[in-house]
Image 1 (cartoon, one colour):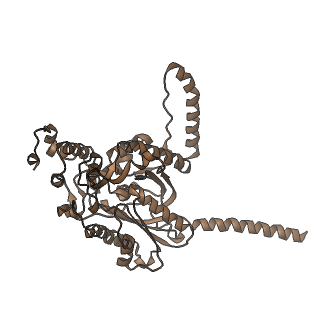
Image 2 (cartoon, rainbow, N blue to C red):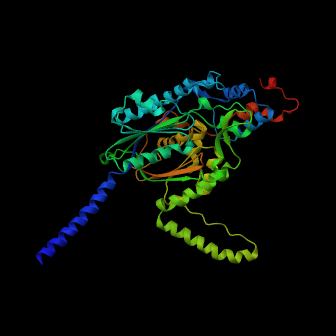
Image 3 (tube, rainbow, N blue to C red):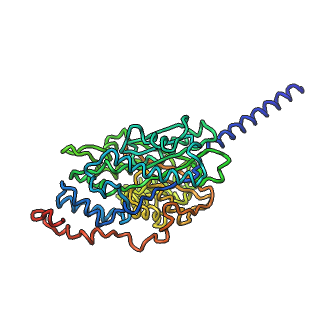
Length: 465
């Protein structure tokens, strides 16, 4: 009898030990964002209305109809006058870039933001265990990741990932890679470097679907420092609770809506199809369907399911009368405090806001980021997050939903928990008091609106020059 008692006791202790071990291992697999640093290029790279016009004038393959199309696009874009362009634009060489132009653009960002984020945390480059770099439209040999390793003299055993072609959603893909590594490696630091190289990607043709990218994208980047060290959890800024990736590359329409290709004259550019909004909506809906159960309270999920069920019951009788009942809307604000939206354009921000039932207060960070920095591709989410931080909106225990879109077509999202009160201005530090401005209207129409009155049959390029 005593033997059986001892056996039962040992079994119980083993069971408790196993549970504790699994719980303890899970604690070492958490993903914390220690810090991040957005890149703010120098003022001599600011792209105002006057110089934007000069660049367009230099693009000889454009005519009046293209000028009118671009004017309409930039006026409604939500982009202001203080965004940044690569130096090649100011040297009047955007139509003939060199390899050195692309490398210099990237290294200017690397050497600034990476050093700043390491200094802020008191770390040396030799302490970084994982490096993930994502730049979609420029790949060099050696890789950009190798250039960073060489410049900062990082360790020989560092785990390195260099991503390309992932589009504007690439930074969350990079964070996802780090999260996976953290599950099998304890007590390590990871550095994510996200940006886009604009120097080699200026389109010199006149296809409308491809010249649009010329006026939407701007220079920027961000370096993000992450860890799974349990001892640093209270020092961290955010804890990553979940990350969901949705990829519709198997659908031909989605795959081809956002793609790098040559036009009929063989000029390389970035094609944005008319059905892009439709593809983005499909990916967005599928992504929300997967992440909703992970981030929303059970009460809201049950309410939504009941509302959906009741609508189906009532719809059968409504069909006889020829009426359609409105679809139930899930309230994401029951589980999310802040919404960090990709600055793909004013239409993207408006669309997400309408779909999620967000207020202007919720959309303000994305709108202001688009106005001040433009669409900086994969790094844009972090400028939006920095705006929230500079406005002192992020308090301990708050939650943030980050949503991004990218070529492929992809929609990626992640759910962050704020670990401590945040109020560092980051890239907004010196100018946050000026935002939001009284008006977001840019002066393009005021300066170039006369183009809308011109007649294509009589218009001459000299009129613009």
